Length: 163
Image (cartoon, rainbow, N blue to C red; front, side, top):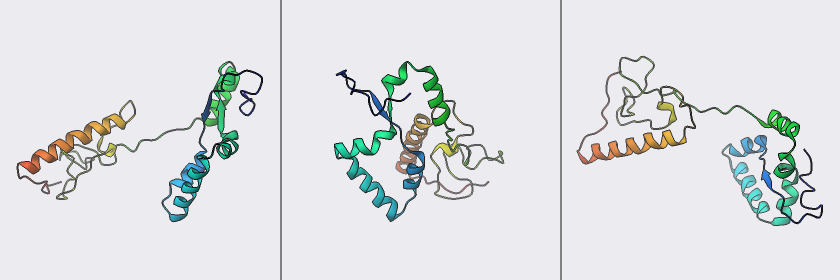
């Protein structure tokens, strides 16, 4: 698998194809909102703008794609070490009818029993889509934006409705 640090130095003039592999623990720590996390992220971004520093810092976090392409055992090992489950928060504010005891919002994304509150994200999906949620969330958001705008133009409001 190796060769990430030595790629492109063996006399071949073709540039090495490298991919950055982020460290999940660092990303998770920086994702927590605090002044310290913000400062660390800012310092990291400044450091990564300087080419020699970037190469030194990321040397062990890059993957030499070209050397790995012909190494099936290396690819299998990499997948075993780096793969992880990805979770999408779906169904926590399930959309459904007033008769559905698990439903939180109606088909207009209005929260049952709470006037003026809508939930418009992946949590309204009654079940997890088979593909990535990004485009389906955009679709729901666009539809609800159009509906809210139409209701506002017609003078209607999202009044509370019975659970």
